[in-house]
Structures are given as C-alpha cells and as structure tokens.
Length: 173
Image 1 (cartoon, rainbow, N blue to C red):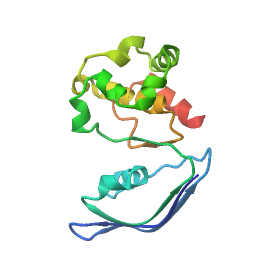
Image 2: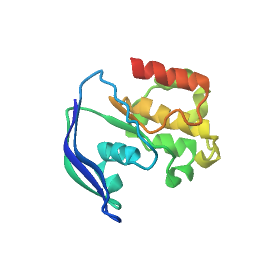
Image 3: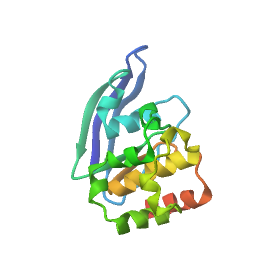
Image 4: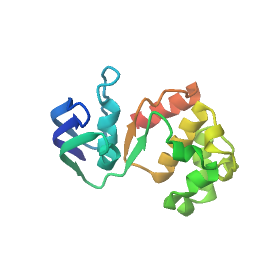
C-alpha cells in the first residue's frame, strides 16, 4: 500500500501552489496515471513520491507519505547526467541486489528486453546509448531490483514496440 495524505506542493521561487490537499491510496494491483499539461507538476509529484529529497531545492512540500513494505522504482523522463558518465557495468553494479542475481536470472531479464546476456558487463558509456537503450537499461535495473511500485515518468519516450509491449505486459501483471 502507498498512501499520500494532505500533500501540498508549493514552488519556492514564485510561491505557486502546484498541489493542495492531495490525497491518494494505492493498494496492491492498483494502477494510476497522472495526466496534465506540461509544467503542471506531474514529474515533481512522482519525484516526491519516490524520494521527497529530490525536490527540496525548488519545492516546499507538506504532507505525509505512508508506505507499507513497498519497494519503489522510479524512471525519470531523462537519465541523470551523473549516470550518463558511467559504464553500463558501473550503472548495474551500483545496485547491491545485482550481485545477488544468478547468471540465469540476469539472462531472463536480458531476454525479456531482447539484449545479449553479457550486456550487463559492458564498458560502453551510458551517455553513448540511444534514447531507447537508456530507457531499456533503466527499466532493466528496476526489474533487477524487483520493485513493487513503478513510477514511470513518460516511459514510452524513445522505446521500441517490443519494449513498449513488455512494459505494458508488466504493468498489466
């Protein structure tokens, strides 16, 4: 279960209220979509749900986030610059659970995404990947972490039909 109680988000620069008295409860199996015009705080809300510290520099937040045993996974609209400077191997190896996965488990994940098993150990720089490959890599890392809540910020940007189909199937499951 993920619950948000009385969330108010206010932009620090112009004091514009983005959300006021926002409440949400998501139970196991629930799916939700945030729809709105560009610049109205959808990404900010998702960042706050994932990790309130991600918005501290520009948003004043007041409210409560209650999580059971949820393991949150967040896919941002754009890969952070610091991640672009890493190799694919460095990117995956930062996750402790990566080291607990067997080659067979990693092979299953790679197969779902239509990539070679040794891709996890690639020395290719993350920044040199295509837009779709960056999304795939980020999704694969979320799959490795076995998250229970996916927060996907415009996940269909840059991905091919096969990855979109996999994402759709995962969401439906």
